[in-house]
Image (cartoon, rainbow, N blue to C red; front, side, top):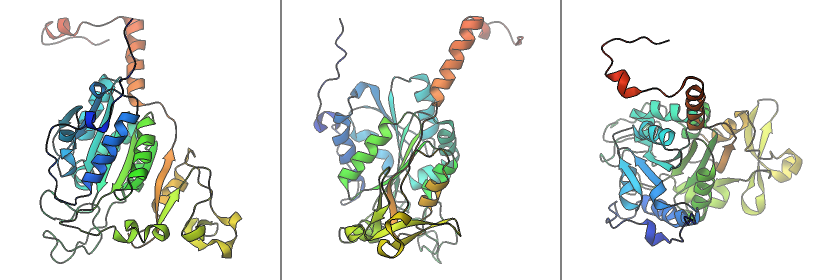
Length: 341
């Protein structure tokens, strides 16, 4: 009998022999550490794990993991990973990307991977800047951002990555940040265990070209009053002793932050990540319009829907059972024309 037990591993087993080469102090180091520490706990094999990346600082990720991996081309990681996940449903396929790679040239590939519910774990590192190419504004840079490519300030309106994912009908949408390893690991675990397209935005500091972009949220002294932790089935409260709460305004249909003592505990919204309608998750994603406002972190949405690979392979099996397996080689050698019935 073949031993199918997954061998016990440690972080060292999942780390490659490649020197990690990001700028000293880059937030990518802490994200890599969280992933390397988590992988031994997932009960998966290294030879069945694949990391696919595009272009950018985040895209160096596959080099630093002792798994299969591919450093692909700009923006195309979700497309390449889709082919792999559909053809090899036995594999754990991760996509590592950045705000420029995923939301600029790769935006089209990202939204279709999400809407199709391809079985992928997508980690988007958002530092609100192009770091690899030395500091141009990105699709998530705030309006007015002065960079090498916007010397008079950006006039673009930035993407909200979570809103984009929810609009594409992603079945799992979450946010974490690079200053809390425990939260990252818990969020990445949830994303990995989800069957379908899991999208995680990671607020990540670029200490060279956009240092301190999230300091108002992730700084140790600010987190308690600035980050809104989401826990399924629990009232959405935060701040010292939970004195602040998220309230649904029945008149405007929007979410606001209020003092719980003023509005009462019954007015505080109870988080439900399993709602099929993404409306409330979308409101949570839009609760903060800048990094200067309290911002939700955690899982916004986690719903069940058949994944794309299962549907495709199920369709192939059904047609094969009904009509028999085709002979592709014979078809290719049959001449320049053929009949499709």
